[in-house]
Amino acid sequence: WDFIYKPIPDSPINWYVGVGPSLYLSSPFALGASGEIGVEYRFSEVPLVVGLDYRPTIVLVERTDFVSSFGFNVRYVF
Image (tube, rainbow, N blue to C red; front, side, top):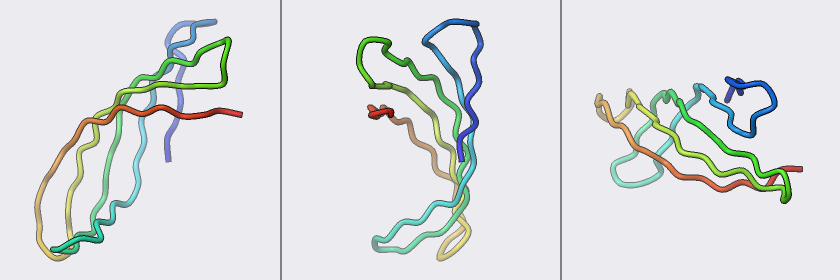
């Protein structure tokens, strides 16, 4: 679940925080909880959003571990 915030009124740049479960269906199997914080830019001419985020994860099942990753995303918005 992501919660979107607008730091500058009438700006195409948003920031967001979120939380949720993480499931890795690989070997070894892992189940945990993730947090997320990032920024996104919404284009006004086309229905696209690009973003960059950081996602720390606490793995709880199969092994106990802390992992983190960065992500770049492109989304289509309605």
